[in-house]
Image 1: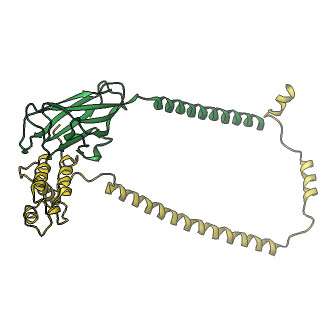
Image 2 (image 1 turned 180 degrees about the horizontal axis):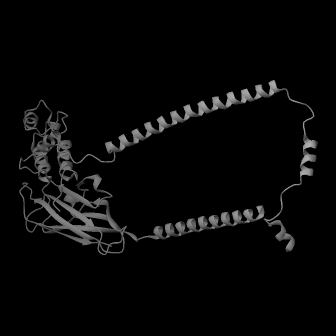
Length: 177
Length: 164
């Protein structure tokens, strides 16, 4: 226990005697002399290297600062654009045109009755003239009304479906609730 | 001296490790507790329309479902499916926006140009819901329009019944 304590004793005398110091110097003294020219040459080379390294470090640091500054600028610019903000609901002219197109009964509201009325027109049309082709008189009349909703040149069940789907679409129907 | 530093370092490292392990363990326990979370169940909601003596040829309604109160943080209602009605005139799946699925609001509509149409009270659609949480959801149901075979608007009463 006391021995262990001895290892942690901070008051140990670490000084060495002058005699021991002289002996050690004699023992480890170089056996040959280094010429002063060689010594100077080594020192010069070491200095050159140190100066080179210093400049390289400074240049690198400069480049790093510019890189960081550029990256920061890009991030600030991206945030200023506010990319996360989604565009709000737009009442564009195309939407108005589409809403007008599917408002078959022209009552200012797009609902299932528009599809129902169009379906009745389509079904009551000339049955021999399938799909109410553009060349038929009925087809031309219906197309004149603007009921070729999908613009395929025919007024048929596909147009009815387009109107019905427009009536139940969530984004355009703000809802009655 | 060195031994003292080594011992102190070892103790510090041990303490930090234990703290980290405890923090991780706590996080895991928290996650597990969250995973258990609120109860999830599926239930149908039957929609009825009573058109009285008039034949029903077309309808459109809107449904909004909300988590009942008191609603825990993760409670909610999602529409997961839509089915047609009872009468053969409305047996086919009605029109609805597919975007309404996994949502809490839906607009449903259908029509039939045939002559065999239902009268009186009839089930026009069934909406399948995913209900998160124990509380019974609140439903808002609004009839947009109901019409007869001539596409004329008729008065009608819309109701719903919760299924099992």
